[in-house]
Amino acid sequence: MAYSRKKVLIISPVHSNLISDLKRHKFEIKYLPNISRKKLAIEISKTYVVVLRSGIQLDKDIISKSNHLRFIIRAGSGLDNIDINEAKKRNIKVFNLPNLNSQSVAEFSFGLLISASRNIVKANIDLKKNLWNKPKLYGYELRNKTIGIIGLGAIGSRIAKIAEVFSMNVLAAVKNKGKKRPKKVKIVPLITLLKKSDFIIFSVPLNNKTKHLLNKKNSKYLKSHSILINISRGGVINEEVLYMLLKKNKIFAAATDVFLHEKKQNKLFKLKNIIVTPHIGAMTFDAQKILAEKTFEKIKNLVK
Ligand code: MLT
Image: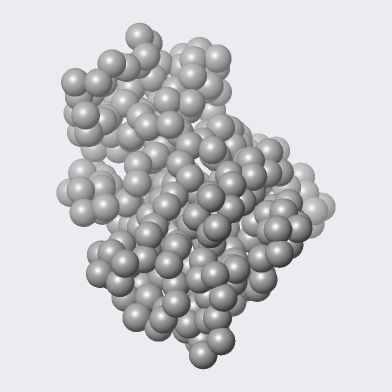
């Protein structure tokens, strides 16, 4: 089968600079951001480098079809959609480019938080139907409220900084308790955070330890006016539990940018008290431009 070291397959939306830079350096690019699984199984067998973001799985089955693949570049942080062990077995090197989109995701979290706490999406939908529902659109201020951040990595720390600007009390639940943390952030156990927070943001990677961090058992500690924001991964919150909390109005609202199965219909979409977005936390020109630059540099250095 014909193949060359210059073959790069890009299977997620990336900034156009990446395509033009690669073309200028005579790479043969296939840019298929909406590729189906069936087509991916064929295309991956012909490529040397694959570039991807979230929302598409490079699982064992797909990686097993990759005869000539040597490098997987994740233009972002999360590696949860790549079977790292299978790649290792086949001597395929996997790289991610962490932290370059953290500011975009942190800012987006506040977009979701304010939209949910002030009913902005609901108001927008109603008004476009000429429904002036002002009495039904009460919300909450952020000032002097408690925000609980689950995970204080690159994104969580930026969320904490923004929260201070809004004069919020900041709690955080973290894995590594020994690490030095920003002065104004109080580190607490997860249960305390769930009990005390008015707003809760999940910003942890998905792994065996973070799967279903919010579950049936601990969801009973949530305040009845709490607002949950998920900008990490769908599996971090048990989706069925979230659905029931919202359906039974056990919390005020939720907003999620991530889902257990992306690019699929979801029953959460049917609820009125949740804002849903298609994993766009990192979709800014700013973040994607720098990611394109770093992805290009990485490929250039790897494929000589
Ligand atoms: C990431 O892991 O960096 C984010 O999920 C952003 C993305 O790839 O869309």
